[in-house]
Length: 124
Image (cartoon, rainbow, N blue to C red; front, side, top):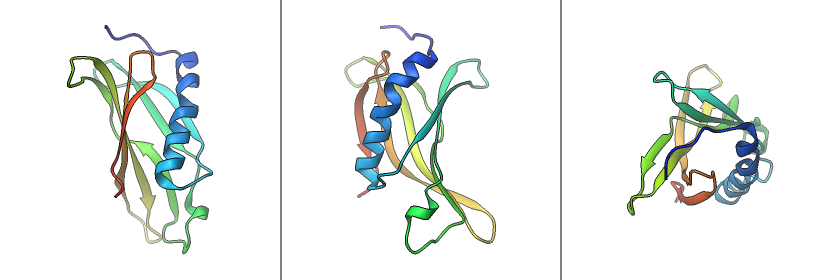
């Protein structure tokens, strides 16, 4: 199967499934995602996601900001030769004194029709 161009309609199909999986994996029931189509430095379409602010859902409050975002992503070939879109999602947090860091949450693998083929949690 060959790559197809993403549309806003395509993204609207997948956003609820991504949110529900992230809620199940993180235990954060208030995750909502902004999802967009961007272009990388090679001119390829990439999916960009960012969650709502989650810092108020942690106790004790350890960061000044906490969101779920993707760092990277793109087309890859699965073990069985199928074309998949790899979408890694991480926590991104900002410290009270400045600086930021992140940590892996889940790798999503989406079919060319943007259905979740596989999700691999990085939280143990």
